[in-house]
Image (tube, rainbow, N blue to C red; front, side, top):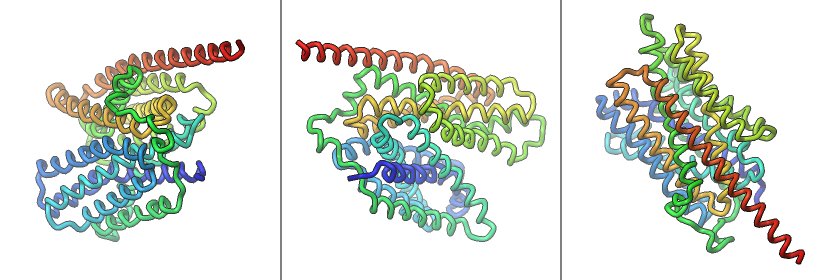
Length: 405
């Protein structure tokens, strides 16, 4: 018999590893460029391989964990991340580096989706709160990778530090080996399986997927472009010191981590719909403040609001998906994350083209447009959930009346 707290801790460790994966390449691309004499095109190839690996991992994990359970999937993919980090530290050719970057992305993609599905499975009745807390560990891992490199780079080689971080990955692997996980769902419930394509035919699932695609695009756009916005717009006319631009990124990421920690408490006491639309309003306020910011301090405050506002959508919507499809959460989460990642890549690429033509200052306008689209989609998702809930209540009442007769 598994213990929920121990299993949730395993999910948190797996999400921490995904945080490390997510910023692994960005943290060491200068090291790789020097070692292999890579130009911008070579670095661009690597930066494409990481999200492609994450996308592939997100697509395949669901049916596997529904059929065979979580334990060995988490162990194998954590070991893939370990092998990828060690390979990144010591590989001697471009071809090997490309392979290891894809390997890290693939393992990370599985860990991201599987840990969210696992946390949802063991958090019935408080899924939103637990998924928010899970997101905190992503932030710890994401901030931990560059912070560790920065702190130790004066005393050790970057390759040695990356290898040490890879060694740390074995700690969660040991924990996964020792913990008892929930049994496979589809063995316990034959015939409950439904493919991701079948799920997409359901309006509520399709609309939720589109909403998370936009949300993922906004998060990716903020992570990838906020430093450039600070350099080109906020600090234009000033000496754009690197630490000032990086502080903008840290404000977005740090605010998101802290907000998810707070949400893990708030969602136990406040209606999730109120928090969901409140978060959209908070992000919109941040985007508007950034649009009209005339000082660095104001822009930094706007970045904090944007990061805090972006924190709620994923855990809240994923909690709805977990409630709707508990018997096939792996497949449901796999499909939803695949859609979200496609949205991330599409919106980021589209914004890059827009920024090239009209300037980076279009960031705030695109954010506001995305927020409007997300709000409309989430309105219809919640309307569909209420309709399903009403039908369920009506069916239960009819059953009770029939039994009474």
